[in-house]
Length: 345
Image 1 (tube, one colour):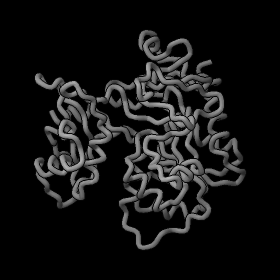
Image 2 (cartoon, one colour):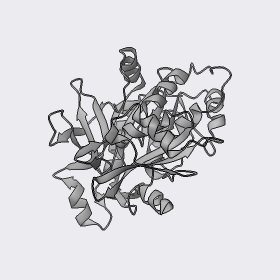
Image 3 (cartoon, rainbow, N blue to C red):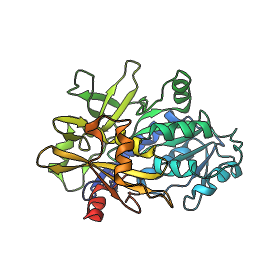
């Protein structure tokens, strides 16, 4: 029976109501309990909104015999102090929140000996952010992969992340292996093994509420089209390479926005950035960037382009740079491209 309607983040269009049944929600709970492996008495500090799918992770912690601390609205300046105050073993952040925590001034490294894991999900983590987070929190970062249509399908535990880092890997884009009964395959892989990520298992949605045509577009014989591009490595780990709809095709070449965003974020005067394609008669699409500057900073478009030219191939350098005060994000921390384009006119 239908248990809940869960609205997607709506990053590129109108939000859709995802139907979850009691059975699919029970499967999600089982996936979380088995993947996270919390013990009775472990404290989970929650600083995220209690949207239905996010709240399922809290119910799973109760099933494990854990204790919940429902904190007030997330504040980067107090998050680490709250972890210490409540002796939290677990918490969860979206990448935007993690970045804000890392930018807070800190005189000394905190005592986080009780902390087991901070789950990171909902969006990609830039390599530089991952490096800084591992330096602050140590081997205590876990990555979950899923979506409202298929929550908690893959999980990279803190122990696995720690081992990858000790082996000299950056772990960029890695989201672990499928959990419990979840299925995973790559549709139409290229010669590098990259293609669209397909997901299966009892945690999948029943479909979109009153949208049978849209449901048929993404659900095929028990498999969900994620819209994400990725590959399965020899060790079984899934590596997410980006969104298929976000790939910019300029002059016959494909450009991953994440690579350009990472380059911009490495500029000392850039606080936040997003990269997208804009229609171009000659090139098909041209690379564009929306940039938020740090307080008091005032680099020109040319200076940022010159910075990118030192790192990226010429065709990946943004042809146009828009300066904005903030980037519109959903409650999951994802950039809402439709709102950004409206903001830019």
